[in-house]
Amino acid sequence: MIELFIADVHLPYFNENAVDIMIDYIKKQRIYIETLVLGGDIMDFESVSSFTHDPDNWSLQSEIPFLSQFIEKLDKAFHPMKIYYIEGNHERRLENYIITKAPALYGMITIQDMLDKKYQIEYVDNWKLMTSGLTPLKIRKLYHLHGHELKIGGRKNLAERILSATHENTVVGHWHKTDEYFFRTIGNKVKGAWVVGCMGQTFVSYDPHTNWNNGFAIIDYLENGVFKVDNLKIINGEVV
Image 1: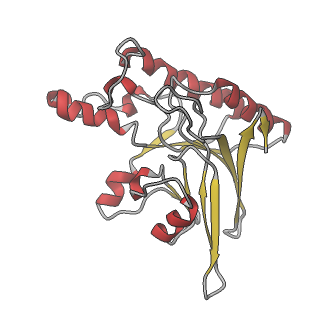
Image 2: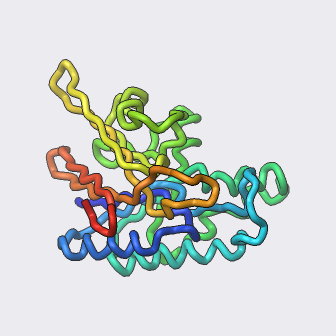
Image 3: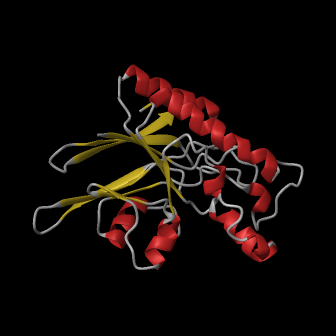
C-alpha cells in the first residue's frame, strides 16, 4: 500500500504551483496512491482566528469552497481508496471560535459537514483521542499526527525531539519544514520521526523570513510491516 501524506496547505493560501509539481511528480514516477492522509491545517480559518487579521481578507463563507475544490483535485489525480483528514490547530480555530463566540451553535457547524459525502473521508481528531487516553491515528506501524498535539516549541532538531516525545515511528506536519531522525534501540529496532514540509505559501505577510519549505511524503507499506518514507522537498520548482 502506498500513502501520500500532505499537511499545512492553509487553504485558501495554498501554493498551487507546488501542488501541481507534486501531482506531476507522482504521475511521472507512476506511483499509485491508495491512501491519502491530509495531515492537518488543510484549511487556514483566518477569519475565525484569535490572532489579529485583516477583515478585508477571506471570510469564512469564501474559504469553505476551497476545501471541496482541493479534495476534488487530489481525487481526480490519484483516485485514492481511502482518505484520512487529521485535525490541525488551524481546523481547531473553528471549534474554539464557536465555543467562545457562539456556543449555542456548538456541534451544529463542523468541518465534517464541509466535507463532500461522495468521498470516503475519515476525520480524525488526535487531540481528543490522546486527551481521552486513546491512541492517535496509526497506519500499520506508523503514527500520524499533525504535530501540535505534542506541544513541542522551537524549530531546531524537530524530528529528534518528536521521537523523544513519542518513542514510536511518527510522521507529522505543522512546522512547515522538512526534517527526519532515527535511533536504534538496544534491541536493534529502528524508530524514526519525519517532519513533512508544507503545501501552503512559504512567504507570508506576518513573518519576513520563515525558513519554510514545500514538501510531501510518499510512504510505501510492505506486507511484512516494514515501511519506507520518502520525505520529499520542493526546492526551486523541483522535487528533491
